[in-house]
Length: 252
Image (cartoon, rainbow, N blue to C red; front, side, top):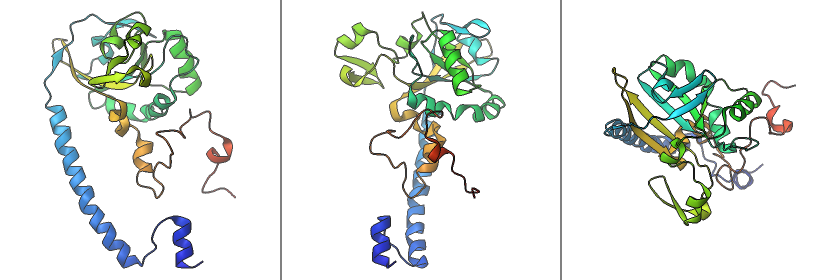
């Protein structure tokens, strides 16, 4: 195959190794600048002021009713993922499920570094537990059913809110045509020695993207995420066709 034919097939220029190294070194300078910018952003995120959480939220858990402070499980920091699963849904949001597939491997590392990771959904606990069993997950997952928690953190929108034409989401007004009764996000909380709980951070929409290690790896591959629309290829992990999932580098 000629170089021209190879370039047409791959969609990329094909160059000698030394020219590739020069291009890679130039990109490395941009990557390092991005890393330093990310470090500065993370420092600014950590420096945000804290605001107290005074409302007595209650959650249904496999171990009985719990307050927000109880979800810390004795640790000082709580990472809470707002998982899109409303009462009566047959399954959780596909995108949330994709993200949640990354959680179980994080648990021992987070837990041993003073962090508790919990998912919360508005669906009743039995519906959450049924979907958790289907997916085979182990991470803590609680229900906010019957409380104002999801509405207060701007991830659940009753019909009357959607009927107003727009809702508060991601620190802006989102057109109701682009919203659903449930949306996703991540919130962080800190707790002091006397048990006081503070809201320290929340992010929504693509703000949770760096929690998806699969995407971070794909972004370093030649085809990237290889999608025609945001996450249009993503399925729940038990819904992929075997002809792709069963492939192995060691297959005969």
